[in-house]
Image 1 (spheres, one colour):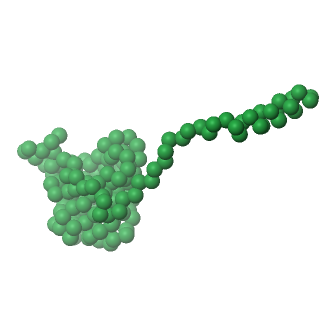
Image 2: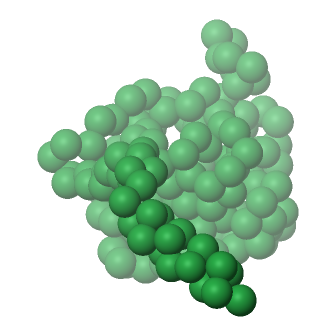
Image 3: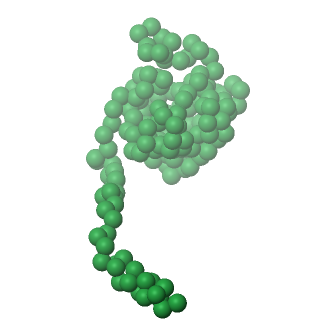
Length: 161
């Protein structure tokens, strides 16, 4: 019994003397509005959109956070997403209509600060007044499927597939 106690005492004295394991450096990622890098929006959105990916990669499996900035008069025709969509209105006037045949007359205005989530497969359309920034977050890949294929910018001449 004496040997076991001495062994534990020796190990107890030795372990703190071992060099600490090196952990990868942790880093905070902070994005003040003036430092956000905007790029041309994806070909799945009508021309004029800009995107800033803040975390993850919305084209791949896994969690992502991105912002989309669009100009006054911007419109995204009726579409769906294969995964739930989560949005926060950061700036501007975001009008959202849901249902099988969404119209601007049926759209509700989501004021700045609004958070919304709607289920996968829900048909919706968007109209914008003033420059608007919306933050999207969720599990990728983020995909948009237009109800009317003719509305899909990727199907227009010169559009990417």
